[in-house]
Image (cartoon, rainbow, N blue to C red):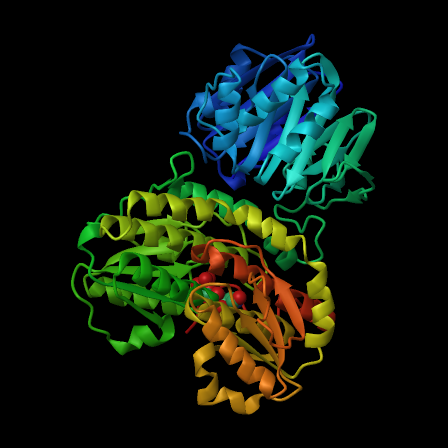
Length: 606
Ligand code: M6R
């Protein structure tokens, strides 16, 4: 994951920037760079690989500027080579960037037609040229950024410095986090407070959509509408902790808000964003010859696997067998030799999942692990690792790990569909483009968080809650119910919407909230019919949908409006309301959100 550092210092800053970048190494990176303003001119050093390569470069050719930005890059658009490493720059401006500029193809075409030459394969270079064009027209740096930001679509964080201006650094946040550090006559910018810990513990976290005009005298923060806003300066404990809560009350909240960033990075590992193609690692078996896929996992990871079943069967037309690991390990299921068995796990240490993996290995299966902890037992015992780049997940409730698992499994479904000749090049591009838009849509959903706080006052009084969904939304109903019960201790159950009338409908009365996960897809009308059945019995519906007509005339207690997106990516997006409903209800109930009773983060016993 990319890391951003910026310093307005009293003396040469390149060395301090490298030190700060070292504290962001845990995020993972494949190249690094620093740019400074020296005698009014911008200059930079970049290197592939580890920071020591950049340090060697700086040793041979030092940078002396007192104003600088630095970056560790996790390649998304373009190979991890020096040419694509950040900072990117023109004679007028230098930029570091974390995230994805989704509309970079359109911007690149516009700028190329305007005579701008692209030297890299990155999306970031469009930001450099957009700013250079503004500055070339005589627009002042702050106004140039104000004009440029609305042109960008996607989830991103930026750090920007300007030639001829030794006392200005601009940071912008649209999704991924960015913090401003306050020193004594010095100011800083960082992807997180950990990077800034050696310099200061006085930190201002930018809110989503904010941008910060930083000088040695202080910071002016503006919101997305360009209005000046006040953001508090807080004392960060990051100096002593590797992983902190930032300005969030709980790790779970922080991890929910990290999703646009970590999903972007996870996707970048499996798709070529510039080409709109899946770039899947070699699993050591011929994907076109696979006749059956077996998936096993526990809890939330199992629900990610269940979504994958819908995706793989629909898009690759391969039958998928799936079971919770605690059942599959003793079931002695017959498995055809040479098949693909996929294990989904955040910790990589879940005892039942590990035991099932060993069983499948014994049955001659090729083992692939969708895993967050790469050094874990499950990662070590697998033939192929499909990493989720979620970063450390501290809250017991799985949030960002789940959506990163879904991201990897979505790419797997496309890769299988391609290999099996069931997905055309055009379809692949359509699905990849839809995935690329997910971080931005999640950012939009997270901006509407206030409604969940209100809803929590109602749900917090319920004794039981039902969740309903059809198709790939059924696992989301299960996930919503699991999330609510594990952190709020309210009894909740998820059902396939069509199963309602086979039993659970007996529970419905006016005291029963029913959360309906209903994206506008080919099953929407059927879900609406089930909703009518609930409404007719007095059930209190909370509908989560992108349908313009909402609940299609059905009376509802609450309506959570979702962005209009490709149905393929619905599970990734509808996971967010499931998390926010549970989180805010638990906060309202006053439970221990990050460490709920009786639960462990890593379940290493049967
Ligand atoms: O580490 P794993 O992904 O293998 O863990 C599996 C489950 O224990 C886990 O997803 C659990 O269900 C979560 N607490 C749910 O939020």
